[in-house]
Image (tube, rainbow, N blue to C red):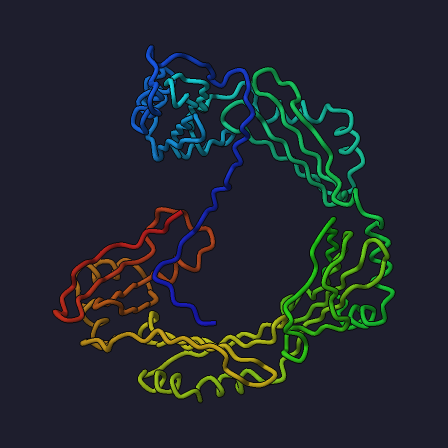
Amino acid sequence: MKQQLTSRKATSTIIAIILSLVTVSTIITGSLIARDYIKKSSYITYQEAIDIACAIPEVATFLEENDITSMSANLKGDVWIVEFYADNINYTEDFYCWMNYAYVEIDATTGDVLFYVVYSPKTQNYTEQEVIEIANAIPEIAEWIENQGGDISINAWYDGYELWYIDYWSDGIRTYPFVIISDVDGSVVYWEIYDPYSQANHTEEEIIQIVEALELVQQWITANPDYERVVTFYETIWFGYSPIMNNQNYHTTIIPPINETDGGIWVVDYWTLDNPYLNWISITVDDDTGEIIEIMQNLVPTKTYEEIISIAEAHPDIGAFLDSLNSYTADAIFDSYYGYWYVYFENDENYLEYATVDIIDATGEIFYYYINDLPDPNLSSSEALAIALANQEVQDYLATITGYEIYIGFYDGYWYIDLIDDVLTLNETLIPGIIIGIRVVIDDITEEVIDVSLIVLEE
């Protein structure tokens, strides 16, 4: 599919860390009398509850040291719950902290502080390697490591408060050890070796044997020797699908699905390595009985790519939109599960102007379409590009590079022209912060350049 980009970014994903609300010794806790009088006739007010909480010395210090992003007070029965959040991302190699937090409970009739807790990050006492060694010394964990039959992965992270979390994974063993260690004294707070199949009546090997005894599966494996297989067990599941079945072109169901099963189920999925989305088969097995519950297989399109594009172009509204464009690019993707085609048309002169069409393969029926048609601009795309290229800042930048790609978009009365260094963008080892292009913004009515800025690769 043709892609139009205003800039290319290297993105990084910050993993959300689950904050364990385990009350441990170094977390500040306490109770005190915030007032020396009692309101007999009514509850203290919202603002009074906030003021009482803020007067607690530890909370006051917390508020001074953090940029508070959220504050709330909620009345629950006779108790005000006051909470302060400071969502300050704080990350280093061995330190993860996603939230600073203070919590206060206040008697709504007396103003007495019943309980409070302040979670503030602290530097850890142990290193990642030290806590891993502690976890590895647990006899059951040591035995698991000794028996692992493939590559092993051990990850440890500190929650920023007082606990270390250690996760284990091996491609040779299906079980997953998990350990929590106190950063205060290195003691093991909790550990387990999770077995996803512990409640199953059958083993994975037995399920594979049942599934691969099916003639249909054997035929598929023979026809597709390069495949991936994944076996998944679900302990309890409501099992059922949409009433749209094979006559509506909703996947190929060899055995119709049951509506519900009380016990667990196994799902065995196969797909080809070279075409996983268009060539697959999935078998569901009842864990209690070992019987096949359902077999699903990918649909094969009955229409060609060219036929689908022609159907989309023939729709009156789509055709009128395409006729208004000087040129456009078309693409179509087949969904082998639903049996739908997703067609995309894009204006070559303005990537923000496009149309999408969804078509049922079996019938050729268009069941949804959308046109993002924008008002006709004063300038043409070539005229807007000429204005951008005539800008002195643009000329100075282009003189420093050997070639560039052009991306042009028009939206809400403005032209956006991005000139991207085509040598840099082909480099897979780009470092965030480097300049990869230049952007020009032009007012379509006045034909004036209103902004020129360098495009910087972001993290």
